[in-house]
Image (cartoon, rainbow, N blue to C red; front, side, top):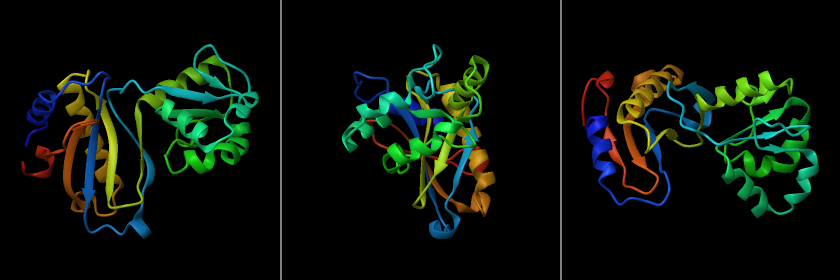
Length: 210
Protein backbone atom coordinates (compact mmCIF):
# COMPACT_ATOMS: atom_id res chain seq x y z
CA UNK A 1 0.00 0.00 0.00
CA UNK A 2 1.30 3.47 -0.84
CA UNK A 3 1.97 5.71 2.14
CA UNK A 4 -0.56 8.37 1.16
CA UNK A 5 -3.26 5.74 0.68
CA UNK A 6 -2.46 4.30 4.11
CA UNK A 7 -2.60 7.75 5.71
CA UNK A 8 -6.00 8.39 4.10
CA UNK A 9 -7.26 5.13 5.59
CA UNK A 10 -5.92 5.96 9.05
CA UNK A 11 -7.55 9.40 8.95
CA UNK A 12 -10.96 7.72 8.49
CA UNK A 13 -10.73 6.10 11.90
CA UNK A 14 -12.30 7.49 15.08
CA UNK A 15 -11.08 10.98 15.97
CA UNK A 16 -9.38 11.36 19.34
CA UNK A 17 -9.34 14.30 21.74
CA UNK A 18 -5.60 14.76 21.25
CA UNK A 19 -3.24 15.03 18.32
CA UNK A 20 -2.01 11.52 17.67
CA UNK A 21 1.54 10.71 16.66
CA UNK A 22 2.26 8.88 13.43
CA UNK A 23 4.42 5.86 14.21
CA UNK A 24 6.72 4.16 11.73
CA UNK A 25 7.36 0.50 12.55
CA UNK A 26 10.19 -1.30 10.79
CA UNK A 27 10.35 -5.04 11.36
CA UNK A 28 13.75 -6.56 10.64
CA UNK A 29 15.06 -9.85 9.30
CA UNK A 30 18.49 -11.50 9.29
CA UNK A 31 19.32 -9.26 12.24
CA UNK A 32 21.02 -10.43 15.45
CA UNK A 33 19.78 -7.96 18.04
CA UNK A 34 22.33 -9.23 20.59
CA UNK A 35 25.24 -8.21 18.38
CA UNK A 36 23.82 -5.62 16.00
CA UNK A 37 21.42 -3.52 18.11
CA UNK A 38 21.41 0.13 17.07
CA UNK A 39 21.89 3.16 19.29
CA UNK A 40 22.01 6.16 17.01
CA UNK A 41 20.09 9.12 15.59
CA UNK A 42 18.68 9.92 12.17
CA UNK A 43 17.67 13.29 10.77
CA UNK A 44 14.13 14.07 9.60
CA UNK A 45 13.27 16.93 7.21
CA UNK A 46 10.01 18.07 8.83
CA UNK A 47 10.00 18.56 12.62
CA UNK A 48 7.34 16.70 14.59
CA UNK A 49 6.73 19.44 17.18
CA UNK A 50 8.45 17.53 19.93
CA UNK A 51 8.07 18.79 23.47
CA UNK A 52 11.61 19.20 24.76
CA UNK A 53 12.59 19.61 28.41
CA UNK A 54 15.95 20.67 29.81
CA UNK A 55 18.13 19.78 32.79
CA UNK A 56 20.06 22.99 33.44
CA UNK A 57 22.05 24.54 36.28
CA UNK A 58 19.79 27.60 36.03
CA UNK A 59 16.39 28.21 34.49
CA UNK A 60 16.15 29.35 30.89
CA UNK A 61 13.40 31.47 29.37
CA UNK A 62 13.71 29.43 26.18
CA UNK A 63 12.66 26.04 27.52
CA UNK A 64 10.93 24.37 30.46
CA UNK A 65 13.82 23.80 32.84
CA UNK A 66 14.57 21.30 35.58
CA UNK A 67 17.36 22.35 37.93
CA UNK A 68 19.06 20.29 40.62
CA UNK A 69 16.91 21.90 43.29
CA UNK A 70 13.87 20.40 41.53
CA UNK A 71 15.17 16.84 41.93
CA UNK A 72 13.45 16.51 45.33
CA UNK A 73 10.09 16.58 43.54
CA UNK A 74 10.84 13.20 42.00
CA UNK A 75 11.05 10.89 45.00
CA UNK A 76 9.22 7.89 43.56
CA UNK A 77 9.55 5.90 40.35
CA UNK A 78 6.02 6.96 39.38
CA UNK A 79 7.05 10.64 39.63
CA UNK A 80 10.08 10.04 37.41
CA UNK A 81 7.98 8.11 34.89
CA UNK A 82 5.46 10.96 34.82
CA UNK A 83 8.28 13.41 34.11
CA UNK A 84 9.67 11.22 31.34
CA UNK A 85 6.26 10.93 29.69
CA UNK A 86 5.73 14.69 29.86
CA UNK A 87 8.41 15.34 27.24
CA UNK A 88 9.39 13.74 23.96
CA UNK A 89 13.08 14.33 24.65
CA UNK A 90 15.48 16.15 26.95
CA UNK A 91 18.59 18.26 26.68
CA UNK A 92 21.06 18.66 29.53
CA UNK A 93 24.04 20.70 30.62
CA UNK A 94 27.11 18.45 30.50
CA UNK A 95 28.13 18.99 34.17
CA UNK A 96 24.75 17.65 35.32
CA UNK A 97 24.88 14.33 33.46
CA UNK A 98 26.30 12.31 36.36
CA UNK A 99 23.56 13.42 38.74
CA UNK A 100 20.88 12.99 36.05
CA UNK A 101 22.03 9.42 35.41
CA UNK A 102 21.99 8.62 39.12
CA UNK A 103 18.56 10.12 39.76
CA UNK A 104 16.68 9.40 36.53
CA UNK A 105 18.75 6.88 34.56
CA UNK A 106 16.92 3.72 35.66
CA UNK A 107 13.70 5.10 34.17
CA UNK A 108 14.96 7.36 31.40
CA UNK A 109 17.38 4.75 30.02
CA UNK A 110 14.82 2.07 29.06
CA UNK A 111 12.49 4.80 27.74
CA UNK A 112 15.23 6.25 25.50
CA UNK A 113 14.87 9.64 27.18
CA UNK A 114 18.43 10.11 28.46
CA UNK A 115 20.23 13.07 26.84
CA UNK A 116 23.00 11.86 24.55
CA UNK A 117 26.35 13.30 23.39
CA UNK A 118 25.03 12.84 19.84
CA UNK A 119 21.91 14.90 20.50
CA UNK A 120 21.00 16.52 23.78
CA UNK A 121 24.08 17.37 25.83
CA UNK A 122 25.28 20.96 25.71
CA UNK A 123 28.62 22.31 26.92
CA UNK A 124 27.37 25.87 27.47
CA UNK A 125 24.06 27.25 28.70
CA UNK A 126 23.88 30.49 26.72
CA UNK A 127 20.75 31.26 24.70
CA UNK A 128 22.37 30.55 21.33
CA UNK A 129 23.56 27.08 22.35
CA UNK A 130 20.23 26.17 23.95
CA UNK A 131 18.24 27.42 20.93
CA UNK A 132 20.43 25.49 18.51
CA UNK A 133 20.03 22.27 20.48
CA UNK A 134 16.25 22.67 20.81
CA UNK A 135 16.02 23.03 17.03
CA UNK A 136 18.30 20.04 16.47
CA UNK A 137 16.22 17.84 18.79
CA UNK A 138 13.12 18.60 16.71
CA UNK A 139 14.84 17.30 13.59
CA UNK A 140 16.23 14.01 14.89
CA UNK A 141 14.77 10.65 15.82
CA UNK A 142 16.53 8.22 18.10
CA UNK A 143 16.95 4.57 17.22
CA UNK A 144 17.67 2.26 20.12
CA UNK A 145 16.34 -1.24 19.65
CA UNK A 146 16.46 -4.30 21.86
CA UNK A 147 14.43 -6.46 19.49
CA UNK A 148 14.14 -7.05 15.75
CA UNK A 149 11.66 -4.20 15.39
CA UNK A 150 12.19 -0.45 15.37
CA UNK A 151 9.46 2.07 16.22
CA UNK A 152 9.93 5.74 15.34
CA UNK A 153 7.73 8.82 15.46
CA UNK A 154 7.60 10.12 11.90
CA UNK A 155 4.99 12.84 12.36
CA UNK A 156 1.80 14.06 13.98
CA UNK A 157 -1.66 13.63 12.50
CA UNK A 158 -2.06 17.40 12.05
CA UNK A 159 0.88 17.43 9.63
CA UNK A 160 0.26 17.19 5.88
CA UNK A 161 0.42 13.81 4.15
CA UNK A 162 3.24 15.18 2.00
CA UNK A 163 5.40 16.11 4.99
CA UNK A 164 4.74 12.80 6.76
CA UNK A 165 5.56 10.87 3.58
CA UNK A 166 8.80 12.80 3.09
CA UNK A 167 9.76 12.06 6.68
CA UNK A 168 9.10 8.35 6.18
CA UNK A 169 11.14 8.14 2.99
CA UNK A 170 14.03 10.07 4.58
CA UNK A 171 13.96 7.97 7.74
CA UNK A 172 13.91 4.69 5.83
CA UNK A 173 16.84 5.74 3.68
CA UNK A 174 18.82 6.80 6.75
CA UNK A 175 17.94 3.61 8.60
CA UNK A 176 18.98 1.51 5.62
CA UNK A 177 22.40 3.14 5.79
CA UNK A 178 22.81 2.19 9.44
CA UNK A 179 21.69 -1.43 9.24
CA UNK A 180 24.51 -3.96 8.76
CA UNK A 181 22.98 -5.39 5.58
CA UNK A 182 21.00 -2.36 4.54
CA UNK A 183 17.76 -3.01 2.70
CA UNK A 184 18.20 -6.75 3.12
CA UNK A 185 17.61 -6.32 6.87
CA UNK A 186 14.12 -4.83 6.36
CA UNK A 187 11.26 -7.34 6.37
CA UNK A 188 8.29 -5.01 6.41
CA UNK A 189 7.30 -1.41 7.12
CA UNK A 190 4.08 -0.33 8.81
CA UNK A 191 2.54 2.96 9.92
CA UNK A 192 -0.14 3.73 12.50
CA UNK A 193 -1.54 6.56 14.55
CA UNK A 194 -1.32 6.32 18.33
CA UNK A 195 -4.75 4.70 18.71
CA UNK A 196 -5.24 3.00 15.35
CA UNK A 197 -4.44 -0.30 13.68
CA UNK A 198 -1.17 -0.72 11.75
CA UNK A 199 -1.09 -0.69 7.95
CA UNK A 200 1.70 -2.19 5.91
CA UNK A 201 3.42 0.07 3.42
CA UNK A 202 6.39 -0.36 1.17
CA UNK A 203 7.94 2.64 -0.51
CA UNK A 204 8.92 2.53 -4.18
CA UNK A 205 12.54 2.64 -3.01
CA UNK A 206 12.11 -0.99 -1.90
CA UNK A 207 11.07 -2.11 -5.34
CA UNK A 208 7.52 -3.22 -4.52
CA UNK A 209 4.22 -2.12 -3.07
CA UNK A 210 2.42 -4.30 -0.53
